[in-house]
Each structure stands twice: as C-alpha cells, then as structure tokens.
Amino acid sequence: MDHAEAKELLVLKVCLNEIERCRPFLLVLLGDRYGWVPPQERMQTACREGAFTGDVAGKSVTALEIELGLFA
Image (cartoon, helix red, strand yellow):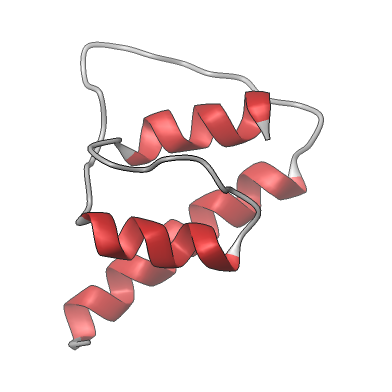
C-alpha cells in the first residue's frame, strides 16, 4: 500500500470511528453530491476493522456513514 492509499484508509477509519463515537446521535445533511466512492478493497478493509458488516460495493463514504449510524 502506498502513502496515498494509506492516507485514504486512515480517513475511512476516522469517519467510521466518529460515527460510532457519536452514537446514538446522527445528523445527516444531504445535498446535491453523493460523496466520495473509494476503491472497494479499501472500504472493506476499513469496515472489517470497524463495526460495519454490510455490503460496501459501489457505496460512497456518505452512504456508508448513514448506514452505519442508522442500521448497525
């Protein structure tokens, strides 16, 4: 994994950890953009280390955060 990939993985982990830390509170502000869609293997790695066990294929970080906050 190169430096850029490691940074992206760290960003994903921080996002998911913040959702977990804020439970049971979640405020979603959704606009015109859907969010960043990282490579699937990076999403799976971040989710595996966190609490999310759902399907990540083709999902943006925003969608993943919402699903984690509402359904996990």
